[in-house]
Image (tube, rainbow, N blue to C red; front, side, top):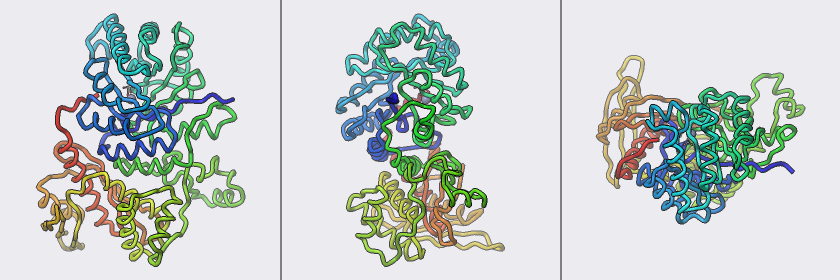
Length: 514
Ligand code: KIV
Ligand code: ZN
């Protein structure tokens, strides 16, 4: 029987630390429900002490999401542990994850504490957490750069104090697979009470080795892998859940492990996370990228048509790609629309369905053929914007641009039922629109990234615009979709503005950064 690997998802905690990523509490809950449908074993829902908003989000996930263990992060400090413990109270099964750095560089420069004090603080942190739950995870932060003998000592002590999972973070993505596998093996062999706790791994992707290191770790005795959807996370991100799970599934011949992940839910989860965080998935991303199953070369296409195994090591359907099937047109009714969405795995509330159907009708008028991918984009944008309070909504726009004239834009937005209008010129039509929007909102956004992709093929394809914009000193990722790329650009910008307004209103209190 293959050994079961515990999948610990940290999309909502480490993933949300991705530059530009931002999630509303409602968005977090939406993702947590989807992670439960995906079959993850543990959801790290946030860092409750970091802000009142994060505390409430973890609490809402703990209260509403059934199935997985719900986990909250805490430093080895009483106030952090109390916040985590309190936010997890509604959970059927709650875990507190305490962490403290153990590498010389972190202890000396960041914490400014000697080894003995670190050991003491770690013991006290775990003991304090045990007042709230008996499911306690301890992370010696920067473990892969810690002195091994000291690491063994800390781990032995925290297990004595009650830790049931020991996570070994490669915090800065420095490790190489053989070295990291050896570290896990040595921890197993040198910590006398290691059999009393599960070894977990948490790898960052600074050298592009997060997944390889995680696989090396399970081959050497780790029983839990920490990962995120689409590999999002601090700096270069974390190990991607979908890559680890599919490596285990596809290479069953070498990797005698199993996970509880329902792989057909992977693609949908990936899209949801990308839509709600605003962080796009690179086209060539393994498993979930737009090109992951696209064959460009004629030889490859010929081979795949003859026998898919020639160039496909897994079927796109295994991870939930439906393929771009022609499904609907402007004569399709609400019932057929909702049935098709169900077949694609989306169950919407009545109000969401109505809005999505309206969008579909508008799209079907502009576009002869509506594909599954178009439907998914409509729904995700509907759900995505639905989790952000829609303070400003686009009512109308008009642009004028040409090779011999300065681009100008006139924009109409609605706010609380009132229509507000402004016009502006700009360096290009998008710039003119954004300046007109700024005049209406009184906010000033600075665009740091702008990308556009077509959702399906054809001149009438839906265009999806992804942007990163700095507003009020905060960088926010956002998206918008339309068959008109100017409209998609304005929608993306409004999505960013609505997110920042939502965040500002929620952020009462000081934010604690990791
Ligand atoms: O990367 C890291 O070390 C972390 C810890 C908090 C586990 O995210
Ligand atoms: Zn991390």
